Length: 397
Ligand code: PLP
Image (cartoon, rainbow, N blue to C red):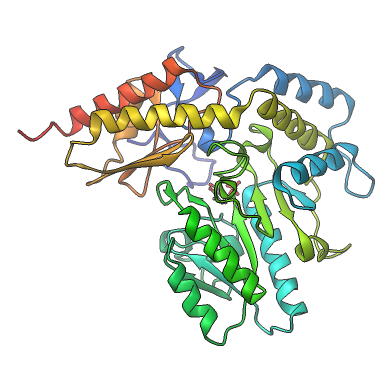
């Protein structure tokens, strides 16, 4: 069921029949005054919840002081944010953009420069099946979904696709003559339905990159910033990539993206080679600094790990025996329930029960609740979704 859409908006989204007017923490209220529990966070964005007082305060204060100056002058809040990103990532330098897909574009441009510096004529990037990296032309070309790419050909070239979580496929490319400059992957595939990379796999591809002189770029746009139970999901494997892309939760809803790079990759962009009018303005950067401070002070990574385990245990206890549930998986507060059949309509049924969920690839219930939810709210998410699944598919006798 899709709501009637406005005739003056391009028809890009299949929207749910609801309009939200305000929010507080994990709660949202629609224009009729009904309250909903948000288990999606605007697709992994509002990690600190809605109308977070500290975020609201810095946005109001900065709007009164100075919203924007171009990158023609120094921007102290941008410098401060870059310092913070270096601290939490272990990488040296950031480029601040406005969105996830722009962070990916920046990463891909760095990879191209790196490849050319190494003498490759057509530097390639190994990317994954079922990945999602965004909607601009290079990002959608890197994306492993024909649905995202169809109609936008000719795609940007140079991407070599392999199955996710399969180190042998990467070794096979490495063992033959190749023009690869980098590997790009999500440590937890989000759009694919919360598919977690094995820690051993991440360690092995780090090793292949080191052996081959390839850059390792990890897309942490959805999985990063405490959601998986660590600042970044790849940190569970104890590896350090060469490039990290971040966005979504970075300013809790204020548009921002960051491409963070270390070592040789950190120094390849020089004046005139990349830029953005809005990217890195004082408003976005100060907001992001406040978000990172709050995440650290409130230990949201630990909280996410703990509550994520609670939700996963709850689902496993109640749903494991059900034949129509294929798999319950996740890390921290990034959780997927893969179902046997199409469950797209469950998001509308959930809405009727005052719960906001997401369904990806038609068969996977995807949950990205705010990291500030409490145990009661976590239990409510489990209870309502189990009820929905039980009602939708009664247990076979
Ligand atoms: N990469 C990943 C892993 C994502 O999940 C997304 C968005 O869902 C993007 C990139 C694109 O980010 P944005 O929508 O901010 O351009």
